Length: 475
Ligand SMILES: [Fe+2]
Image 1 (tube, rainbow, N blue to C red):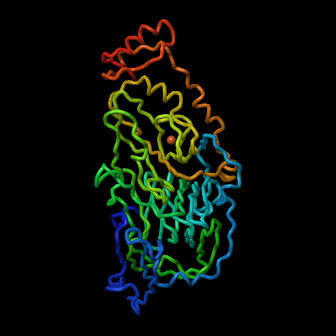
Image 2 (cartoon, rainbow, N blue to C red):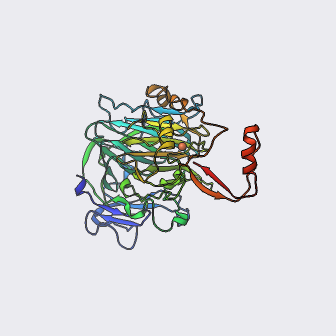
């Protein structure tokens, strides 16, 4: 139950937790005999030799070591894909209607569907994006990802996640990260759906805040890590499922792997509630770049350029003056995958629905649809609330995303009419345009050169080209 779960607070901290008093060895990591007859095990999240500031590992003290499993055997999964060059590239703007949750019984692992991705897990470079749809708990099984980290964003239904580190409950408007190698089990009640961002290269970190200062955006104290919880349960044929090099493998063992009585370290699973995000926004004019909404980033080797960013668009105030307030039209050198947890996205109120998605690939133009442009170009610019009762998010990657068979075809959710939302954008250009009183005015003292278009304009241009200060109006 959610209210009974306890968490440790902080991001990147050295945590320690024990479910029995004195279960955590004192003064050393692997004593000759551990308290309570436990086995000691180290779970490494970075190379042993990674610099101290990025080095991650945890020590687990458990009833049996995980090595007791029988051999792994391949396990088929029709919707998992890690070959992102299989299909022909598709540069179009894409939008998916809400993905179906199957009627037949499906759990979190069998409910994984790869939508798109880049790179490959063998060379540990790239990322994948999944939809998960399920309606059944995983029962006597545990899953772990050998290839990278899962950032899980529930859209419908709450996930009761049991990990080797303890339990966490994660619902819509929250996210969690379960990192490479951590075994976990997902319990659900009813139809459940959400999104997953997987990264192969590095672990997620909080973005640098630069001039924002020491506080803001996602604050470290709001990340929550489970406290130690264990079960001493013998189970015939408990299934251990590993995603290894993009494929599933299954091994059996005769006990629950959630038998860690105590642990310490800085390599841990964690969750975060979006309501805690401290939103920064433009308070004078112009639309800030969406990077101000970054919750977590997985950095690449190129400074300031992410393998993938996780970005949210939370409820906030919009107060900018003489500004087109929705997102500007743009073409991006990154790939942008968006999802909607609930409500309406501000730049496209129709068609982009909770449980659906959109993908705007590298250099593919996108921006507000016709209605949004028209409304935002003429609306009164008083302070207004934006995105109340709405939560959309973006997985943004510097890599080119290739679609899977399921993502582009088999899901049968691609909205073929998506491009039409921009087709009605009219030409508003008027060479005889004159400023109207509603436009904002600022004084510009630099002479402006304008090439005369015809005789009528020549008089005006003569005025504009004069050395006198010009009161230039624009909106
Ligand atoms: Fe965009």
